[in-house]
Length: 521
Image (cartoon, rainbow, N blue to C red; front, side, top):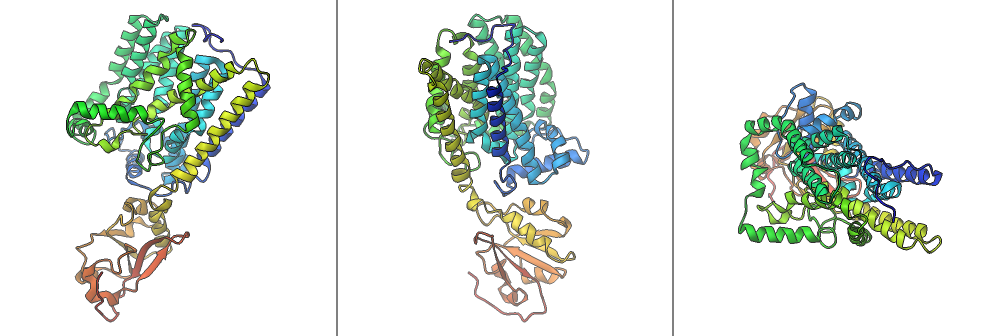
């Protein structure tokens, strides 16, 4: 087998026309998978997306926020502002922004693969990462988790380039990028220690790394992390006991919980994965069956004598980036987590691609067999992951991916402009509709109001200015049972989605109608 690129010698560029064609086709597939029906898949805004939208609204209004909104830090929101300026702040714009960041993840995976194993490993890694449902879900979701694999993989690429070429600037840049994880998302808080550990492991395998280099890495991390200490001091409760810190507070025996979480993490790629419907086809392993086998072959590939010295570049980040998920001791149902381990996905894809490399090398004596074998494996991975995303993940979203909020917004926008709209209660079907999701889609959000179910009465309706429309749960005959004496003021209209699913009830308010009593249910 060919040796890894020697230190000081960057990998050569391939001049093969066939290689360039394969690279172009892979990039095309990656883009198509990320943009296909992006407007409607997934369709409904939910709580995490509201956090992103509100954060960028703060930035757009010149407030320059630096806080963490629950677990979402400032970095991602500032980073995507150029995309938002072009695509707009709606949900489609947020999804386009996450697609753009995911393309950066793919570019970094390709660059790391080329550094470690030349053009072929770079291309194979790019293809696997491009089509895998694990990364594809977060590429299209519009949420900030997609920044974690970007920071981790760019930092890893700079680290590998430093070891190969001994450029001190690459060392400092790698540490800087990794330390920026402090401003992103809790699972990326450990990026700098992960990369420093990788650097130390490479020294122990005999590569040109000095302990001084590890010290410079740590010092750079401390300098870049100083503003993070200030952010924590402004909101210590969130980090120590609140939304972030509360995740590691044990709900039982610490040792038992850690062992259980380690077991769940160990089988998440091959047997049973994340059960959160927005992060994964529920319970499915994070890798498809073909990729899972190739992953194991990739481990063998990097344990071979000629590759072993460089194996920490893949093994150390892959293993350590599972730690944030394993340390969630407060809610056992959140382990394994496809989102908290997303930073380890690039290394998993490098191992899958390495498994293909191993089979190609073994089949080399048979004329034509390596190319045919690679084509069959990659086609199988593509087909399985397309099915996982479009035919398992999307139908598994709440209410069959029915966008109740968007349908309510569309209905309200068609009302006369002087109409006030009152949403009575919310979230009546699988947590939908998200009121902010309705508001973001309105042409006249100032005329949108919310009323709390259980606190609506005929006196409430007496005080409302007409023209007014009430919107409520499709399963309830009235917005509130207390309105039975004045039900004659309402003319209930039942609305369905284009697919025939009930979505909401609505009624104009006409107080001149004859009052009548109907039995509440």
